[in-house]
Structure formats: C-alpha cells, structure tokens
Length: 231
Image (cartoon, rainbow, N blue to C red; front, side, top):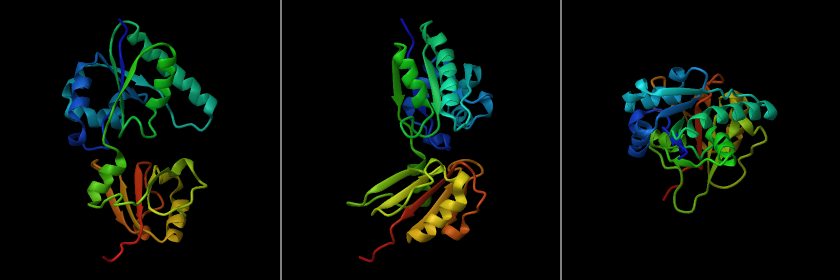
C-alpha cells in the first residue's frame, strides 16, 4: 500500500482558524512536510503546532522551495521536494504537507501535487481558510454583495494589473511592489484597506492608501472595494 499525500491548509495565521479536519489529519499522518529549509521556523509550522502540539514529536520533512523567478530553477526544487516526499509514500506512510491559507489558492503545494501524481501517487486537498476571507473578517467588511464580482490578483507577480473592471479587488502578496500598487490604488477610486500578517502577532491594519507603508511585508493583503453607495 502506498501512502497518501495531503495538502493541508493551515489558514492565514490564527491557529483557531484551522479546521477540525486539518487537525485530525496532521495528527494521523506519519510525516509532516513544510516548504522551507528549517521547518520549525516556517510560518505554516508555527501556526499548526499551536493547534497540534503533537507536531513537535513527528517526523518533520523540510522541502526547500525558495522564491526564485527562474522557472527552471523552480522546477528543480520542486522535483527534489517531490522525490523526498515519495520516499515516504513508497513505504506506505501518509504525508501531511502544510501550506498557508488554502492549498488551492496560489499554493506552493500545487507544484508538488502535480509531480507526485505524475509518478502514480494519490493526493488529497484539505481546504483551509483563505487569507482574504480572514482579512475581510478581521476588518469587519464583506468581500462581495449581491451581484458584485470579486477579483483576486497576485499583485507581486502581475505588474501589469489594472483595476478597470467593476467589482471589488483583493491584491495578494503586494509587499514587493507596494509603491507601484499604491499608485494603482490612488487611481482606482476605491475604498482601500490592508492587513499585514493577518492573525499573527505582528498583525498591522491600514485604512486608506496613505496609511500603507512602502516597506509593507510580503504577507500584505489589500482589499479595494467600490465606494459605498447610499441606499
């Protein structure tokens, strides 16, 4: 029997937002894989271990997946990570791969998933609360109402993004291009809110473009909503 690879979303930062299913499967799996060279220093591990203290005694598998733009280099890292995981799957050991937020939303797990499946192993996704849903709840605002479209944009990777379409926007991973993003927001004519490190100890909230610092961190999420209409 081959092991199962689970891509488990641990949510955006607050361990209380982890699902019961995520907690159960992390406890059940024999190995816990995390994207990073030092597992115990990764954000995903630090979140999960608060909800699953048993993680401290589990076999921890670091999967090096640095943020590099060279697609060939990325592929090499992904292949090495998949190979390390498959060594356990081949022994019939289930592996839990921890990922921030939800494993279906801009997750590093998707690359590992495709490679492992191509080698004949089974995988399962375990949904987690997304950063933008958690940020909206933290800000006490809705993301979309009635017929409003909602646009999710990975701002760090889309320097050509525009906000011309109707509806509300979520700009994820905006930190590395914050100066450019702020200019876009000023021209967009929307109500702007930002949460940096949502649910973590160093969380910061900004209301309005001018409150957003140019040096905001990688985990900075912006919600740009159409101006509130009077009823």
